[in-house]
Figure 1 (cartoon, helix red, strand yellow):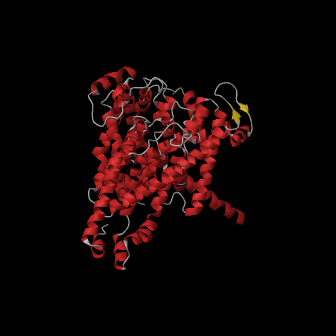
Figure 2: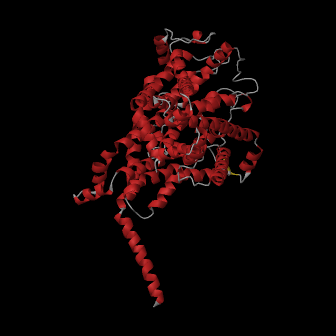
Figure 3: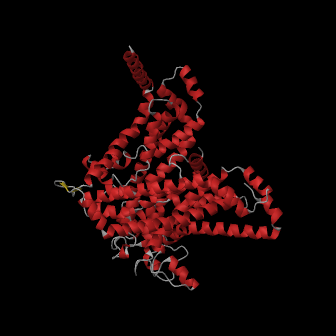
Length: 313
Length: 289
């Protein structure tokens, strides 16, 4: 008797679930394009890539199972370590000044001390609208060692010119970083501006009544309330920064891989070269998964430090 | 937010004026830096290579605009590439708007089993770096016979998780459920409700998402680099790369800058015309809720 009672509610639960599904069939139809396309072009490639990383394959002929050989090669691969180091350096060196600059600019624009806010917003946002190729070429001409605009400016002031492409390759990274900062500061500034607009004016008024100065207001009211927005921009730029490809590829094209001393070699560029230029599909897949693991590890550290899950902004 | 009240009480008028000058100078300096590369591009596009590679570099327009244009056309089928970029970008944008609004509408307006889990699953796909599945993706594309075909660039990108997220935010904030109930009482089918009643109300969201999608497609370099091998099928960013030429023979930089300028023009014009609505639409979705 008791067993009968236990089974019936469960069957009833399943039946009503099926009823709910059938009732909402339209919704499933509406969301299906995403899942279908993602299954074919997203999920399957991600899984197959894992399989590939254990093989050796050039795209033609048989796949040779190699176990962990690709990964052990990865650990000893000098170029991979260089690419990893470069990518990290470029990411940090680009993002710290960029986010700081964006914050300062947004704060100034929001403070009501200057007018023409819309015009400035549009001007600063314009670099985002252009293609990375176009921007890379313009900057390439500006980075000319003898005839470039930047060295011309330096010479006019009396400073020494910069050897952007030669020497030890030291200036290759700054070349990429400047390009990146120029491009993305406006975007982050606009997002911070919107965040600042969301902060209640009453908080500032109350602080002023209590006698708070400008820097105190900034540190104790503005920054804490902006933390979710800052986190949002950090996360958005994180994966994009780790997988930066266009700028290094375009700026160091036709030079040694990644420019002099591989100074501009990023992880994405290395993956592209190994997979699509040299045809080491299995090894490139291993590189891809290594990048994935690095991102996961860094995200975990990020979560521990800031304590907020990525979805809740 | 205005700090003017506090300022007048703690600073004298002179030092507040000084601060204003400094702020304006900083902002304007930054704006000039943002614009300088564009100005440089326009200048160079009106000169020939000899003048460009002479010291000091040119700072004012020259007279070579027409000649550069004439020299560009034999090297790349520019207008064909322009047409390619436009076709891909427009098709991708239309498909994205359609599918993402459908998806966002479903997540926002219907309560169906598994809704929250499916939504979270979709969001988490945004966290995966695009590089990971790249090689099998390419293999699938080539096995489908889509190499050198626009389909490879349009179909995989036709629905984006970001777009669905964006649309869902907008729809749940702006479309009242009473509207749907009223339409149902009037006898509308579910599909009719979406296409006739809800969709026309979504134009601001369509505007922002549309421009972003169009921009992303027009400017994209990496995927076309992988997929489009024939110069006649190439998009503008690829064509520019061809225009760049061989660094050993030396490309024609005036021509390159002209091509770059022309390639940028459509997106810049669209952006400047719609920038007010675009930026506010962008931030409304990004920060609120």
